[in-house]
Image (cartoon, rainbow, N blue to C red):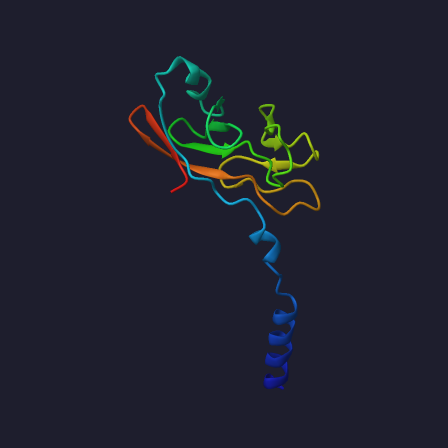
Length: 141
């Protein structure tokens, strides 16, 4: 009986494995290494927790968000489907929106650019942000 149960669960697990080939077609992180200073007047809106600014750089621009006053995250505004020539838009909520196909992507700590629109699997590109004093380094490595 134990062998049959083990066989059943093993077979069930193997049948439920998904294929990640579609994720291999997603735009991966792009080479990026930007340094900016929080004392820059352009970043005044990013000084408060929940604040954000849009910066030049990356493929279509970068959304920089202040998570909690000392931690920051950044996303490229390139549509993950890469079929749109215009950058994604951000209205201050927790979603980036691609205007070409109306797809939306969750942004914020721990969300990682996850698609919020059914049928889309590629996430928005998230960059690493390192804070050293008032200097922020936005990078993909």
